[in-house]
Amino acid sequence: MNGILCIDKPQGFTSHDVVAKCRGILGTRKIGHGGTLDPMATGVLPLFVGRATKACDILPVQDKHYTAEFELGVTTDTQDTTGNVLSRGGVNCEIAQIEEVIRKFIGEGKQVPPMYSAVQVGGQRLYDLARQGIEVEREPRAVIFHSIAILGWDADKNICTIAVHCSKGAYIRTLCHDIGRMLGCGAALSALRRTAACGFALADCITLEQAQGFKNGGALEPRLLPVEAVFSAYPKLKLNARQTKLFTDGVRLSLRRLGISGTPPADYRVFDNNGGFIGIAAPKPDTDDLIIKKWFGVK
Image (cartoon, rainbow, N blue to C red; front, side, top):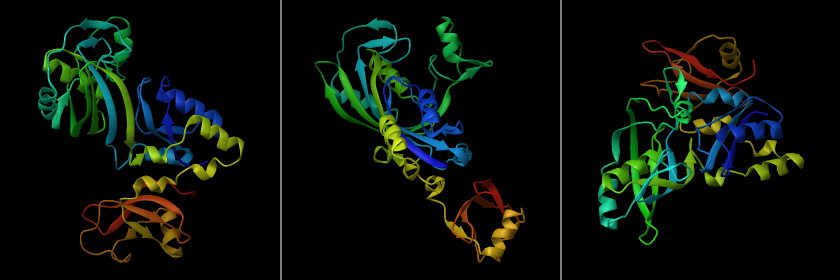
């Protein structure tokens, strides 16, 4: 099988657990995923199957969308409510204050990765060090929060619900922790659902149970999205039979002879003369050549 299978990740599973489960369901080990989710989180987890795994390192859309809940007045060692409580206290803030603080995080900024994360420092995963009770200095990383909007505020339970649109690499539990720190009362993430990733939404997803059911009924392969779906924003370029043969043999094609004039786009979705997706190609700088960037076809 080749293509993209979007799974609605269940709570309690790691992203690797989902990959392992789907390796059994699909009968292949060649599966990658489009962005790690913590075990407590649910939602959109695109799986790249077979030749589609080649797309994982060149995904054009890497922003993520989340719905998150956080509890004010508590801090934990993991920055979410699954961790050990470090402090608990009163909360004395209004919704207007929360909104004011949240606005300060919108835009480009820096974020210190949490100790309980897969980031490597000195060749070791931070979560391995954290489990040994070791805390190390972490370099702040550039992140972008395109938007953060309050969806709800329960003053009795001190629970705030937000919708977040952010760049790849942003930690939502760290965002919630930092909001609580800035409010002076602390905060911990209590629920997280990813609503979009890699250009796919919850409507594109199926559950693990549904995937198993489709497989049992011989109807799983049609559920896989073609790998070119993730590159839908790129212009389409269809080759004729001769051009297909040349390109498949590794010959660079002339942009001018392909009918491309002016300043070409950065990348193209290239299809062969039968309409089959070949891969992603890009103009070579300062030349008239179109070169393959990532090959997805069968040679």
